[in-house]
Each structure stands twice: as C-alpha cells, then as structure tokens.
Amino acid sequence: MVDGRLTPRLRARRLVGMICVLMLAVPLVMVATTRAFGADPVTLTMARNADMLTFDPVVTEDDPSIFVELQVYDRLVKLAASNTGVEPELATSWKVAPDGLSATFTLRPGVKFSDGSPLTADDVVFSLTRAIDQKGSWGFLFSPVKSVTKVDDKTVRLNMSEPFAPLLPALSTFAGSIYSKANFEKWGKDAGQHPLGTGAFVLDSWQKGSQLVLTKNNQYWQSGKPKVDRIVMRVVGDDNTRVLQLQSGQVDIIDFVPPNQVQQITGAGQKIQKVDGTATLRYTLNETVKPLDEANVRCAMAYAIDRAAVTKNIYFGLATVARSLLPSSTLYYDGNADPVTFDLAKAKALLAKSSVPQGFTVTVNLPAGNQTRLDAAQIWASGLKQIGITLKIEQLETTTLIQMRNAEKYSIYNAAWTNDTPDPDELLGVALDFSSQHAAHTFYNNPKAKELLIQQRRELDPKKRQALVTELQRIVNQDCPQIYVVHEPRIYATTPAVVGFAPNSQGKYSFEDVTKK
Image (cartoon, rainbow, N blue to C red):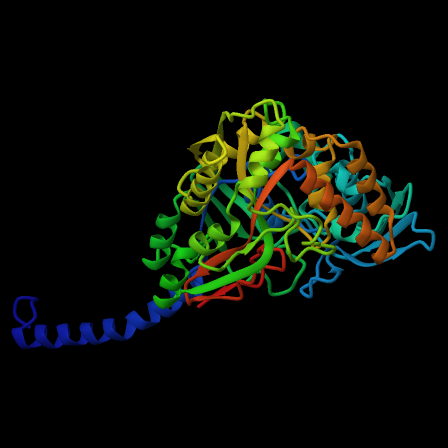
C-alpha cells in the first residue's frame, strides 16, 4: 500500500472478488424477490361482441349481461352437464312436496359473499322474492311461485299456487341469481352497477363500451377455484377484428366466431368450441308498426326467406334450417307443427290478403360488424323483393341495438335466441306472454296461446306437456310474431393455451374451471 492507496495488482484482485460476490448474490436476490411477490397473476383475456348493461338479474335482457352475471353470482341449483336436469350449487338438497305446492331447499353451509360476509337465508329470500315479482322482466319464469319464505337460517321454501313443472330449470337461470340483500339495499337503484355475489369472480373495473375486468373471489366456496386470477373482457364488435386479435395472441378467447372462418382458425392451430342446436336466428317484429300488426303480412315475410340458402351459403353447413321458434335441442321441440318454409307463391298469396297487397318498405336493424347477420338479411331482402316488399338494412353497434329493442323503438330486430335451460318455458314465456316484456317487445297478444302457456307449466305428465308445447309451436307458425331462420350453433375459439373452457349445453360459459398454460 502506498500513501493509503491500493496497488494496481491489489485493485485487480479486489475487483475480481467483488464480481464473484455479486454473481453469487444475484440468484439469492432473485429467489427472495420471487418468494416475496409470488408468481405473475394469470390473466385470461376475452374479446366479446358487445358490452353488458347491468348486473341486476331482474332487469337483465341481454346475453352479454347474463354471461357476466354467471361469473359473479351463484344460484340454488345449476344446469347439469348431461342437459337432463340440475345439480346442487348454493343449495345442497331440496324436496318438492307430494302435492307439488311447495319446494324446500337446504343451503350450503359456510358460503360467503366476496366481501367476507356470510350468505344467509335472508339473502336468498330477498333475491328470489325480487325474481318472482310478476312486474319484473323474468317474473313469468316463476309465475306459479307466490312467495319465498325463510324456514330457518339454512332453509328456504318456495310456495306455489299450483304444481310447476319447470321450477328447477327456472331456478338454474341467471334470473334465479342470489346476491347480497345488504349490498342491494345500500346501492338501491344503482345496485346493478355494484354487484356483490358468491360466484367465482368479483367486478374489479368497468369501462363501459370498452372493457370489463373481473378478479378472483378469494372467498369462493369451491376449494382451489377459480384457477385464473383475472379475466379481461374487451368489447370488440367487429367479427374479423376478434379473429385477428385471437390469431395475433392479443386475446385468449373470442365469441361469435364467423362460420366462414372456422376452418381458417383451426388450421392456424387455435381451438373451436361449438355448441349445436342451442340458438335460433330470428327476426322480431314490432306489431305497433303498421302493417306488421297483420298476421298475413308477417307470415308472408316469413315464407320469403330461403333458409336452405342461408344454411349453405352463410353458415357453410354449420347451421340447420329452422322449423320452429324453439332451438332444436330444446325439450318438446317439434319440427313438424306446420313449420314455415320457403314458399314465394304462398308468400304472395298471404300478402294479397293483407292491407298492403302491392307491398311496402320496412327497416331491419342488425348488429354492426357481424357479416353473418348481414349476409342472411340480404338473402331475405332478395326473397322479399320478389313479393313486392323492400327491406332496408340498418346496422347499429350491438349495445345500442339492444337498448333500442328494449325501448321498443324499432320495426324489425335481428338476433339469436338461446334458452338458458333445455326447458321450453323460458322462450315460450318471453315470446307469447304479453305481460312479460310485451311478448319479447313484439306486442303480440294471443289469449289462446297465453292459456296454453299456463297449462304446459302446470302439466307434470311429459306426454301431455308435449302436446301442449307442440300446439304452441303450431300457433307461432300460424301467427308469425317472430320469424325464425336457422338453428345456429354457438361458436367460440380459444388459443391452445386455454384449457377447460367448455360452454354448457345451452352455449353459456363460466370460468371457474378454466386454466391457462
């Protein structure tokens, strides 16, 4: 050492020693950091065709809202994978009285809401009392249920005015969702924007019209679930853009896969999930708009659709020609109840008996960015032109379109109906019960159909119920309040990294069992 300084040789040795110490220390720091912060959260990103509107099941009328509610809320029972019954969810067991006038449910112990507060019988009574309200959008689903009562802290009873065949399927729908009474009362009219449920996920953020984020519910009663930490649902209205985002790896899952791109997607290594026979592509007609108030006009328009051409040219054989308003996988479906077919001669004869024998002009509203819907409408427009009717096609953003339909400010609305259960009561109730949503916002009102609808709800004999449901399908085919086109599949696509994404028999999806490699 000279004048307190290191010699060049000593400085070199000191430098080498420091480097060695640092090299040993870096892995230790990395290990400590990993242990402190844990692995990166697993995020699943989905591109959906539209945003949701509300988390309040009582006023929900759109699939985007329904599908998110299924992630946040549980119900007493859930649809079985076999598509033939229901399984326990928040209820571990139930018993229907011999006379069919009551059903008692035992609640699962230890269930908590996502804020840590316990699920109680009072929450169930509160939620289902709102659900059965006949003034609500879905009260008709529970029309024979007159009250919901608390037996004790873990037991509730539904009391009915008459036997009710579709009770359990109805309770498995989003309309039967259970949520926190205290939270609902806290938020009041804004409760639909502030959900609190017992489901696998919790609302984290919601940028309306853009993106919704759900995060893992750490209080979830199913041990080890959910298996992902975060779900991002992006609003991507354009079909092609959703496909491109999947192929580029920007998203993990997409909905509403265009049929003409299924082979391209599978060829690129992505996976397709297809659920057949669950949805019916249809046109809803507003009967307050003349001349759509005339059955002859509506049915003339119905007979002008070349359904086989739509199936072949638009769906590439992935859909089937519709022969009923009910999706083909629905219980008591009958494709031989005098179905409406493609028959221009009959269409012309029906129009000739109407108040507009020379035809008229009318507008149909379609979701923007959905090429399948546009192509199908153009085939219909071609058939209508041959009988003197001009169909104007107007495309709107999907959320706007749904809001316009709900406000009943439309002439003809295009969408696909999917039952939430295999039972026909939900769709028939929406389509034929004027007191419920004005019969799917059509204003169709047929007293005979309403009476048959009530009869099939109370009929417990499957053969007798089949006869009633067949007659209801025949009435729809005679009055044409809604015009069906094809029974289309629900088609989703995922990247190979997504495991366990399996929509149920009705095309509805949930994420508690989904993992990502």
